[in-house]
Structures are given as structure tokens and as C-alpha cells.
Image (cartoon, rainbow, N blue to C red; front, side, top):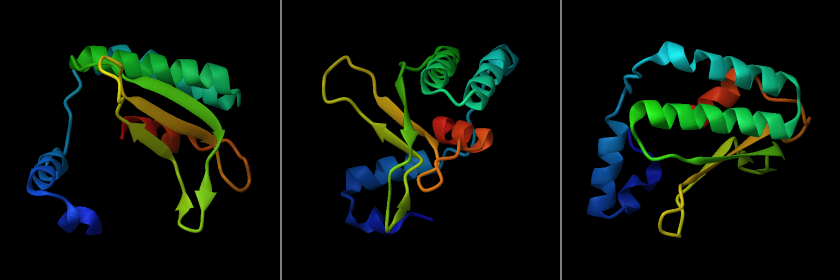
Length: 129
């Protein structure tokens, strides 16, 4: 079910959206080899410090990209989520405007209002999204 903005997209963009929306699973070869990186990320997030969390998230993203044979991404972890009337932002995915520079995934490790560290599963799902 496409989002409301789907009708405002051009034909080419609609086709890209539909192809992307049709992907229901991504087989992950050698998933067990990435498990230590997932555990490292969980531990870093429990430590409530931004730099180690960012480093662990970057290592996991690099491991996933390498395993899947796709180009790398950059990961940035910031403190508290931005929020407004529309809600909270969990993650932001930006393509680079500079040739050769990888896309950037920005994640926030604390909730917007109460500034609590987010649940690990939420953080991981946002990174993998």
C-alpha cells in the first residue's frame, strides 16, 4: 500500500517505489559472522555513550555492506531525536550530492522528550531499515 505522496511522484519514481516496496526479504549470507557486531552495538548502546555507539553502528553497517556486496554507507549517531508536532524522527537516510561519497544514515540514540536511551531493537531496526 503506497503512502499518500505516491500519487505525486513521477512515473519513474513510482516504478522505483514499487520495486523497492516489493522487496520483502534480503537473504543475508553468513549472518552468524555478523552476530558479534550486533552484540557489540547492543553493548555500546547500553553504555549510553555516543562515540562508541556510532563506531559500533558503523562497523555493523560496513559488515552488512561487505557481506551483501553493496556499496558502503556512512553512519552518524547523534544524541536526542528531533521532534515536532508531527512526531519524532528515528533515522534519516540521505544520498550524497558529491560523486563518490557514500550515503549517510543518521540515527539518534535518545528519545526526544525524556532523553532516555532508545531500546536496542528499535535502534537496530532503524539502522537496518
